[in-house]
Image (tube, rainbow, N blue to C red; front, side, top):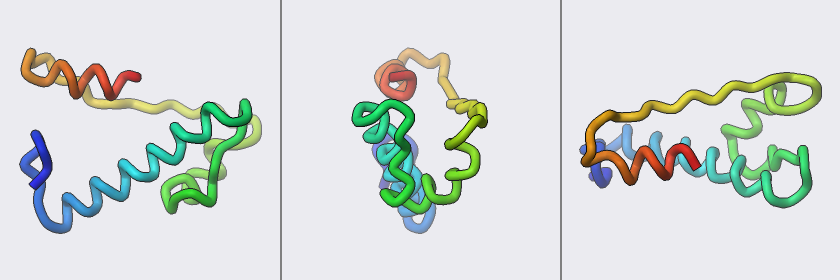
Length: 78
């Protein structure tokens, strides 16, 4: 079961795969400016057309107003 989300089974595996893809994007930020590690995950490969070249990309993330969710909100914004 996911820590605070309560997700299990197939949904948990899907969320884990998405997180791995986002981690691959984050890992590419610190290496070379403008370099995106497309080969590191399926997500980055799918987004290759939107992340490279002269494109502009917008990332949205859900933020909860609950005090209990502060740490998760904080790490999402970093």
